[in-house]
Length: 221
Image (tube, rainbow, N blue to C red):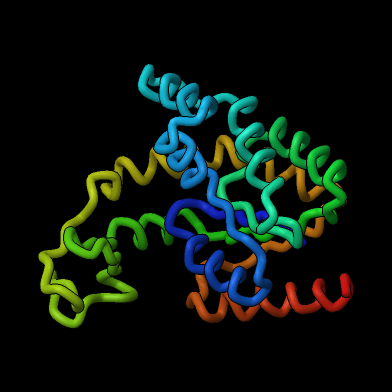
């Protein structure tokens, strides 16, 4: 099973990815993490990506596609995987279709966590983080027991620099500009496409996703 997980910043993708992996026992792949791992390891692709990023450029489809190709060829992806952050362009989506076909994988199941911009804004601008253990709280939905203090180590919580309203608006625009064509591509392709109301509580979002996945897994068995 191949799962593609889409959603704007603050939609809860990280939480849902963990739950999906627990249910399906497939491997989760974050392209952001993969890119950092390649750069940290000093691989040829990582060095090329690092040079581009340090020069202020965007890592090309070619580099990202090669990283994904290498990663899904690993033994832990043999029975399937979840991709978070890829594909980001229609060209990447077409490449992935070809890659999956060559690898004998099934057509992907796509989940789009749909969260309106105003809800995303409220979620992200209410986030605070502990500088010690890096846990993230939300003052609206998941506040610490004591305002401004981490529950686990008494760290003084702070707001990250990229969680300001102006930055969130810019990130949302960038996400929509890049991702909307990809979502349209999958709606019109042979992929199984699910829109999920991401404004629900996290456990309700997963309950909805789990119902869809269990039906799909039963069909594939």
